[in-house]
Image 1 (cartoon, one colour):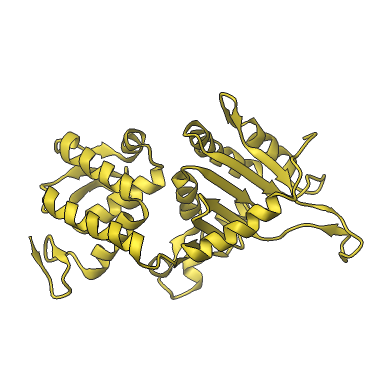
Image 2 (cartoon, rainbow, N blue to C red):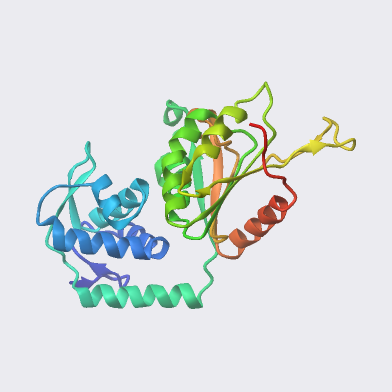
Length: 297
């Protein structure tokens, strides 16, 4: 394995700077999961098709995380995709040695510890016909908002905060399995919402989220809304939509955590990491302190 003009390792002629950028981005965001996936495929796949869900269970990572990692591995030729419709991959001969990957890993660890890690990814959700409305190649400029949000949730190791004024039952049910797994892993989960009323779907959604538990662990659900004579609508509340993973990685955007926000409308967001992510997380945590726990759902 040699180097190209940019000093990047070359596995074959098809691997480009963008391909390796994608691979090293995965190594930076999900170092533990990437290493676990590589080792699993190298030592246990044995040339057979491997399902993404099966890999996720083995390495304790979300489907979306594993799919992103496998796509990056495939793009640089470390593993070959065998069946895109079923999201399975086959092991191919690794063109990088354990020693070479160790050197790359050491470089990434040094970068995380010594360089500024502030970063911002653009996120986008669209209607089903969204791509037909613009000539832009949307998937080249934006990450899928729903996928990024699910990956952020699955990445939490200590504390997860989900804040959205409005929820619905479809999204609550969809996230329930992910949240249960995080509770099982020992993660503290706090959910912030507006007060349930007859005119929104929050009540049923929050009931679903309140029922998510692992043994004695459950989600801490809080309501940030109270009467206010200073507010023209008579209620002091919030409008931001945020997800904070371990106070380090933060989703900030326009999409409520409901079907309209994540699947059927144009929504924009950013994925923040580093100092900016910690700043947003600190603000949200301070507001949580002023939000009472929900009762009487």
